[in-house]
Image (cartoon, rainbow, N blue to C red; front, side, top):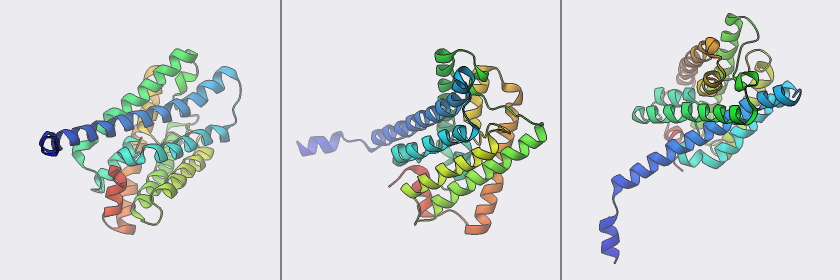
Length: 244
C-alpha cells in the first residue's frame, strides 16, 4: 500500500496545485481589499458621510487580517506593485509574476462588479479619482506608494519583524497613508485596486495617474532598499513566496 501511494505521488502535480492556490489567494485577497476600500466610498455615497479617517482605516485593517489569513499561501501581495518590487529584488520568480498580476486585476474587477450589482452606479463604483490637479495627485500617489512598498520590503527582509508583526506594520502604514491621501487621491497605492472600479465605473480617464505612480514608486523603493540593505535575503524570499 505504501509503495502504491508513493508511486502515485507526483511532485509536478503537487507544484501545480500550490501555484493554483497561490493565484487564487491573490485573487481572493485583492478582491476583498477592493470590495472594502471601494465599498467604503460606495456606501458613503449611498447612505451618508463616512469620515475620511474611517475610509483610511478600513483597507488597512483588511490588509492586516488578510496577511494573517493568506500570507503563508501566496505571500499576501494583493498589489501588482508589491509583486513587481519583490521580483526586481529577486525575491520572487519572474515566471510567477504574470499569474499574480492576472489574479490581482481580475480580483479587483470582480469586486467592483459585485459592488455595482449590490449598490448600483454610485461614486464611480468606488474608483479612486484625484481631487486636485494631475501633477499634485501623481506626486501624492508616488510618495504614498513609495512609503508603503518601502515598509513591505523592510519587513520582509528583517527577520525580527516578519510574520504577524509585518501585518501590523503594513496595515498601519496603509492607514497612515490613507489619512493624508484619501482627500487628495483616494489613497490607492495599488494599481489593481484602482483599475477594477475605474473599469466598471467608467473612470479610466484618470487611471494613468495611479498606474504611473505605482511604477515610479516601486522603482524608487527598490533602489532605496538596495542602498540601505543590499540585495534580497532568504527571509525576504520566504516572505514573498509564502514559505514558512
